[in-house]
Image (tube, rainbow, N blue to C red; front, top):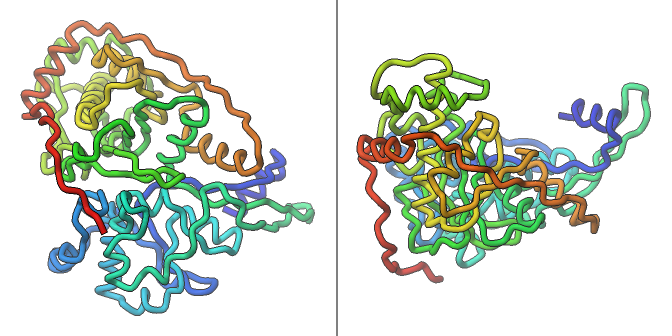
Length: 413
C-alpha cells in the first residue's frame, strides 16, 4: 500500500488519500499494532457457537441489520472472536472499521465513521443514531473511537521517493463503498432516486421506501448515509453470482446471444451466493445446456431479474441510477429499463461511483466542487419476449409479488 501510494504521488502529484471499502470487516488494535489477524468475512462460526451468538443479537427493529451468514454482520464475528479468544477483545483499545483501519495505518489516528458502523453490523441503531444494545451489553462502547465525518482530514503520511525526496500526503477518514457512491450521485444533483450500486454486491438504496417495508428475511436493511441518516436498502451478491453463473465470462454480451437463450428457454434460478432476497435456494440452470457467451447471457438475464425483483421489494418507483462493474457486461441497464418502463434509468460513464464519492468527500473538506452530472438516460433494450421470460422466471423461482406494507412497531429506547 505504501509503495502504491508513493508511485501515485510521484506519477500524479497526489496530495490526499482516502479509503473506501466494503461493509463487513473490523480490526482490533492496541496502541500501534493489531492484537489479532483481521478475520475473513466469508468464514462461518462453528454451529455450536453460532447458536449461542444468535442469542446476543439485537432485534431487527432496533438495528435494521438482517441476520446474515458468515461475517456479513461483523458484530457476529466480534461475538465469535470474543467467545474463543476473549483476551483479544479485552486487550484491544480500539475496534476499527476496515476503512478506518487503513486511515489509522497511514495517519496514526484511531477514529470511527458512521456509514461503515451503520452498515448491517448489528452494532448501530439507525433510528436512534447511536450504538445498539449489543455494544453496551458487551462493554464495547469504550473501545469505539470518537466519530469523525467521512472525508475529514486526520493527519499526514510522510514517505520517501525512490530518489530520496520527502513525500507528504494528507490522510482523510474513510467511508463505506456503496454509501460513498450514494454520496457522489447526490453531490451531482440527484435527489429522489434509487441507486443500484454494483460490484461483488448489488446494493440498492431507496430513501423513499418506508421502513416498515423492510423484510429481514429478504436481506433488506437500513444503511446509514455519511451524514447519519437511515437509508432503506436491499442487496444480493450480484457480481459474485454473475461470475459463478457465467463461468467467469469477462466480455460484453450481445443482444443476439440474449435473444437466442430466451428463445431456447434457458433460465438461471436463485441463488448462486449467500445472502440476498432468495436465501435458502440453490442456484441452478433450467433448460438446454449452454456454454460461452450464451451461458453468460443467461447469467446476465438472471442478475437483471434479481435486480428488478429487489427494486420491487424496496418499493422503487423513482428514477434509477446504475453504478459499477455490471454496467460493463453489456445491456444490463438497457434490459432493466425495458423491465421498468415507468422509471427513467441512468448510467454513469465513470462506473466508479465509490471512488468518485470518496474524492467528492475530500473535495468538500477542501471547499471544492469539481464534479458535474455526466450520467445519461439509457433506452430500453427492445428484447422481444422479455416480459414473458420474466414471468416464467418468477414462476419457476416461486417468487410471489411483494405483500402490501403492514405497519409494525418500531424500536425505541
